[in-house]
Length: 150
Image (cartoon, rainbow, N blue to C red; front, side, top):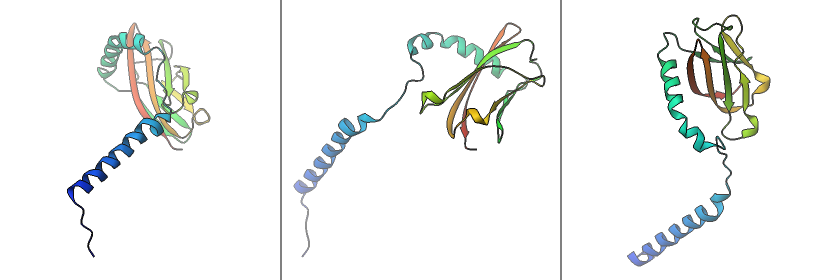
């Protein structure tokens, strides 16, 4: 015996599936946690033109900042133009899934123009690396996604 589904039954099944989907979105999915990147997002948005200018300065460099993921940590190599004596800045590793795992440090370069973030400060997962620094009166900004698997 063949079961025939008429258009009325098909429409009812589609409507019931749609209602189940809406109930799932409304009640069950809303319990998923998410954290804002910043608590002061409006003020940060107003200052975004400065970040655009700093990013353009970083893009205009002859040599780019290289970021390497190594077994000992994350190594950031600055161009030879920047010396450890006249470069000051901030380094942030933000973890979108957990604000408690964020890493914030000052940009302390060694004499070779390198910064190392040791592996003991990191846990497996995705990070957003944000660096802002100033050298000889000019400001720079670099942002990169990093996946730490080691």
